[in-house]
Image (cartoon, rainbow, N blue to C red; front, side, top):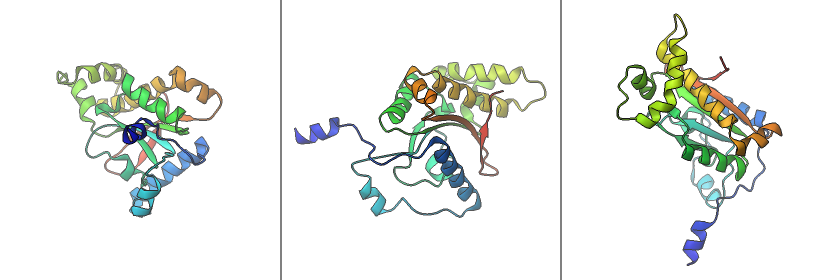
Length: 208
């Protein structure tokens, strides 16, 4: 019974969290280290692993694609317990994904949510090329972004659709009743971004 009781306990965040802008700055600086190949190498050893065995206080939620080339902990040079990662093909946010985000924001008091699309996203391309029969639920969520991209003249369809998809998913988070109060109190920042394989850079995106 003791072990069952422990499993039922929520994972609590004990440490103070940074302000939203500080969390975003920390994330960007981590990506800059990744780009320059000057990774800190901290926060991944036995000391951190043991320190985090009963608690976690991630400073950012990262909604990313399941693509094997897109690992947020690596791209942002993060350590154990730094990032709360939600990964689904096409970095779409389902009902379950939204609950995961809400858990981090409300229970762990994570001050930043970043939805990150990436170059040459297979899921977005599948919708663009009408080869999405194996991912119908994911395709339904990506389709609005594809339509937005198709309405933009002289644009790289895949790149624009991927960017719009990240922005659309960010807007889904913004509309969540469980997160709106945090936004209104300026306790959290929600951002969208695009990861470029060639440069290694993660660039923030603005609403079109």
